[in-house]
Length: 236
Image (cartoon, rainbow, N blue to C red; front, side):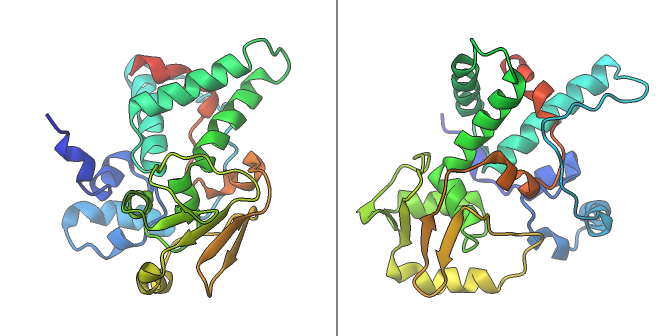
C-alpha cells in the first residue's frame, strides 16, 4: 500500500514544529487562524547562525516526555529540511558515518556529524534546491525524475546521486521559463553557497570545491543539537 502522506504539503508540519523549516515565504500569506501564531513567531525571529555541533543542556534538565519530544522534533526538522527524507535513508547515512570514524579517537563526534551533513549536502536534489531556482527539494526531485537535469552532459534520474567537485549541472531549456519565475518569488534568508558557481543566463551550475560543513551551517534556520539527535536515530 502506498504512503499517500508523502505528497502532502510540508507547511502543516511547520505549525507542530514551530519552525519555518525550509525558509519558505509561501505560508506567511495563509489566512487561516492556525497559521497566525507561527507567522508572528517567524516574522519576529531574527536571522542567526547556529552551531550544530555544540550541545546545550537546559538549565533545569529534561523530564522524559520533553526530552523524547525534543529529539523527535529535531529528527523531523532534519528530515523536512532535506525534503522529507525517510528514516531508512537517514539511518543508512548515519551508519555509514559511524563506521567510517569508528576507529578514530580525536574529534570523533565532530567528524561524524560533518561527514553525515556532507553526504546530505552532496545529494543532487539538495544541490538543485541550493541552486536558488527551485522552491523546494521536492520540486528538485520531480525535475530529476522527469529527466530534465543533466550532469556533465548526461541525463540523471536518481535524485540521491552524490555530486563531486568539478561537476557541471544543467537544466533542460524547456524549463528555463519556469525557473525564471521561481527566481522572482520572494525568499527568506536564501543564500547561494560559496561552493557553487551559477550562470543565471544559461541556468548552469558548477561545483567549485568540496563541500565544507562550515560553508552551509548558516543555512539551518534552527538549532538541531546534532551530537545528541544522531544517537537517537535508531530509537524512533
